[in-house]
Image 1 (cartoon, rainbow, N blue to C red):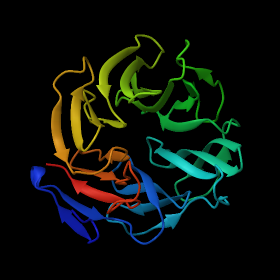
Image 2 (cartoon, rainbow, N blue to C red):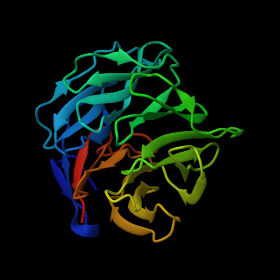
Image 3 (cartoon, helix red, strand yellow):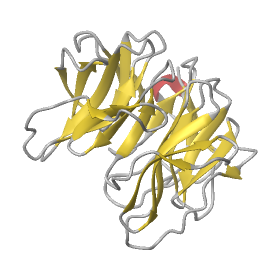
Length: 278
């Protein structure tokens, strides 16, 4: 099934996918703003912003990208008021950490200095940021102060990553992966009550009411109970690869995905698509 055109319709759920980006530049890691009208994403290893129809594009960061070396901007997340964006930045080879920038591209600040710090996510009350500092999850205040580990213990060769705050801010869902397929795990925002939902996943997002998690392993987008890992339901099967990065809109009527494929180039790889959910 080709995604070369401006839009494609899938039979499952009659969902429609609309390309929001195009061209040879690689676009990935989209995150939808709290009001649902803007999308921040990574294009050629720098942060960009556009509206929910793909227009009004503006480049936020201007890092010098070094080919074949870790550099640039990655994994953005919005502040709950939609005024700032936190992300992983590596301005130069192996010199970076967690950064924050205003949504208009002004006031860039570096919060941490470990270039391995990654995948930050802003708490819904705006008071904390959770992030991966391999192999564990850490939490800090939005100015970078009082950084401390949220999780402890020997993980062997495993790494905790992709943390996502629940809408109420009382829980954090994340992935635990090592040599095998990552599993969804949960922990209280206070670091207590860690548990596994024992479900394979490469990406996740919360439902608006905090009762379910959207997750994706293989092609289907599914939901699962955040309480006990039951009631798995398939929402959409778009027949893409295993490593799509997606985000769900605040009203849960649509989502964005970058359609990255697991095994090399494929139709639609490296662009951002908007899908209307059934």
